[in-house]
Length: 324
Image (tube, rainbow, N blue to C red; front, top):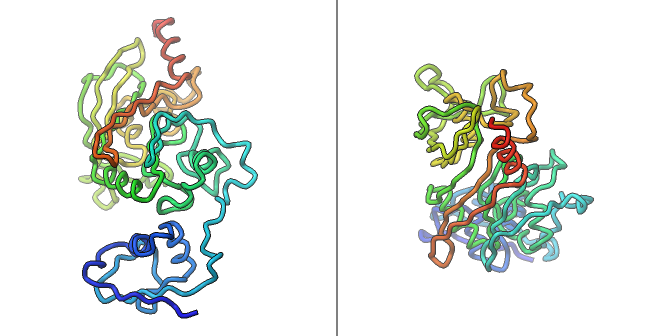
């Protein structure tokens, strides 16, 4: 069979090639095109490219012919032998375009080949198999934002590629409103405020983020980060905060709260040494994504709320009983 060739026009330019192909051939998903591009079955100007290649006017896209059966998306490889590990997840809301869940702690937002921990991806593929065709990465079907493994709370997932792009754009352009509940050590002073501190990767531990003072460490790559917080309840040794991240940096809330002297209770990564051996009746960080405001495809703004996880409720109840 002959290879298919497409000459890119001005109106078709200035977009990712995987997105263009998914639109041009609507019967095939974006994830399917990404797989073909990665397998070197799509060329631009006779050269191999990546799925994020941005098309230019005059580019010649060549699609190498392969047997039709090859183009089918196989079952998610990470589900093999993992059926017993698929987590139970509460669905808060669902329509034709989205699924909103209350993610439990201990569950990854997306799967990782290096981890055998259960993930939201495992749950989604089992619950809604068509989600395998949604998104840009076969490890994170339909996922447009993430929560840390040991953070519980509200997450929204796209059920089709139109919804995926629509939701992703809102997160990218900071059009969503997110609210978290965080219990921190100490009595926070001032009780409410804004944390404007740049965040970058730690030089001593590449798996951690840290606040970067660009005046002293101008050569270290960092990004703007902004977090708004207010105290909603004080305990003897702790403060319960309502926290709203205005940017989406990795571990942002945990890094920022530690930076101002009030680390999240139970955080095993961002803490002060004096709390390291504290005997807590809590097996993870006290951080819960309680609320998400976002526009759905019908044009209406919706607010989704996730009830506080049972282990965090119990911990607060015990604090009140002890007067801690």
